[in-house]
Amino acid sequence: MLALSRKKNEALVINNNIEITVLEIKGEQVKLGISAPKDVPVYRKEVYIQIQEANKEAMNATVAQTLEDLF
Image (cartoon, rainbow, N blue to C red; front, top):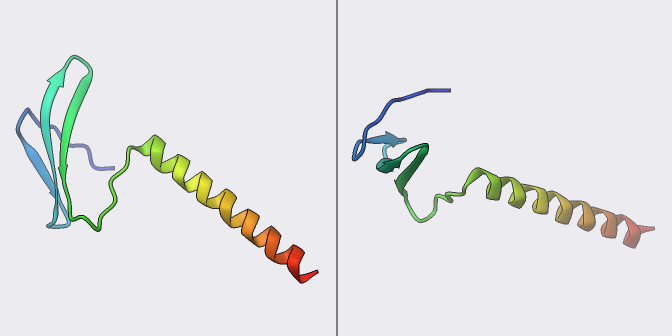
């Protein structure tokens, strides 16, 4: 993991097309602005994990149904 220090209004760039800017700092909370191409999904980690779990459940249900249909 790369750890960087940034101040308000400072940014970092990822892969030449994603920019993350520190918009505001209040106590222990940091507000970030993310500029990325529309084809790059951006999620909070907890939402991303929920999406991945839902996708796994859907895939397992599909596989189970397909096996049931075969037999």
